Length: 224
Image (tube, rainbow, N blue to C red; front, side, top):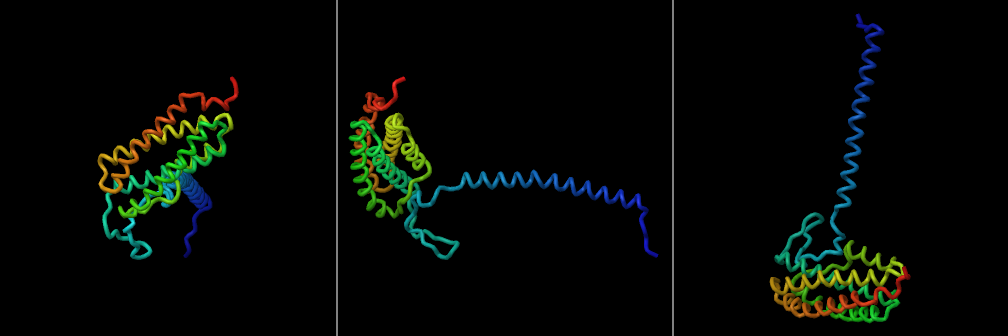
């Protein structure tokens, strides 16, 4: 004989099931939110575009998922090539923007000097990087891209001040890079390059600081 539950019992079971389903959904929602937040966080903290990074040029693809390095390259050498290359790329593009946008002749003169100097430095660095078995980056990283966007979007009144500030910081960083590799670099050709460039970058830094101390960045500012 088939067993039957009283109506009240069936209603109690159905009510309990509703409570369980509601509790499960309440547990799932924060888990889904947390998972979504984690995915966004991981995406934001993801690596730079590979094209903005230097790499060991002896790395060879074995298949779709595996690569092997046929000859080790010191990580400090790769780091130096990456930073020096990105610095040259940024300086060249920033100079082009300054030549187009600046209304101050002394700033334009400095920008032209930077365009010439960093174009020459970039040309000199290329064979040295190849000889050191390092593939140079071909695109700017997000930090330098953001700085160029700031220059493009700056008002006429603020442009020269922004350009001078960026150039001061950039040359301070590059001077530190050159000095360090000149003293501690593991590749002779690149080390000689760093030694040669150190006084050049130092002179550029002196020039941009002089511009900063002059009224150059105040010429186009609106009177207060």
